[in-house]
Image 1 (cartoon, rainbow, N blue to C red):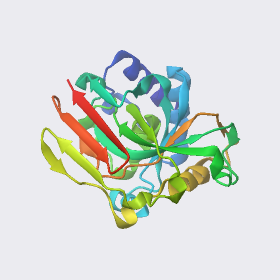
Image 2 (image 1 turned 180 degrees about the horizontal axis):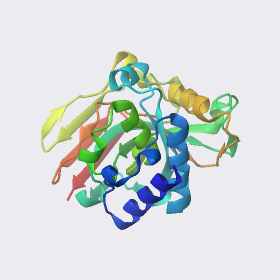
Image 3 (image 1 turned 30 degrees about the vertical axis):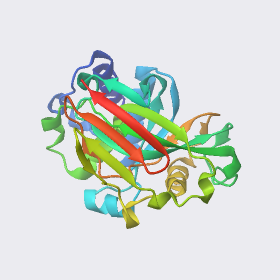
Image 4 (image 1 turned 45 degrees about the vertical axis):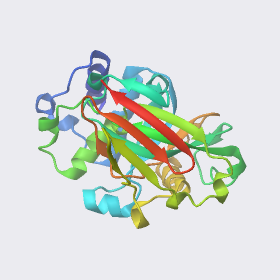
Length: 259
C-alpha cells in the first residue's frame, strides 16, 4: 500500500491524474486496513500540515445504497481552507462534489476514545462546506466495484479537496440541527436539497462513528482541530463557471464562484 500512497501524493503535488491501470493489483486496497495503510503512506509522502479530519458516508442507509462497509474518513490539510465568499479554479478541484456539512471543533488536545464526546463544552460547532476531489483518472477507477472504490477513496485522504468553515453555531446543543433547512442556488436554479430522516446525520452521531473508527489506534485530535461531519444534502457535482449560493436557514450564507 506504500506505493499507492506515494503515487497519490505525487499526483496531488504535480496536479496530474493517477491511472489505476498502471498500478499493480497488489497495490489496490481490498480491505479497510489496506486502505488506511495507503492513506497513511499518502500523508507521509505529501508532508502537509493537517488541522483535523473529515468523515463521510456515516448514515447506514447511504452505506447500504453505495455498497460500503463503513464511513469514509480522511484528514484536512491547512492549505485547503477557503473563505466563505470565494473563487475556486475548476482545475484545482477535479471530479468534485460540493457537500453542505457541520464541522465540530475541539478546544483541547484529546485522545480519540470513548471519552472524546463526554464533555461537549469542549466542542464548538460550525456550518461548513466540503468540496471533495480526487486525483484518480475516473475511467480507470470506475472498473472497480463500489466497495473497492470506497477503499480507493479512503486511500486518497477521504476524497479531500477544499474546505470552507462558516460561522459558529451558538448554543448548538439546544438547536434542532437535523431540521435546519438548506437553500441551494446554482446559477439561479433554486432548490432545497437537504437530507431528511435516516440520511440526515446529527454531528454527534458522526463524532461517535469517528471515535469508533479510530479509538484503537492511540491517536489524538489537537486543540482547534475540526471534524467535518458528512453531507447534509445530496452532493452536488460542480461544473465550470458555476455560481453557487448556499443558505443554512437562520445561520449562514456562502457564495462560491467556479472559474
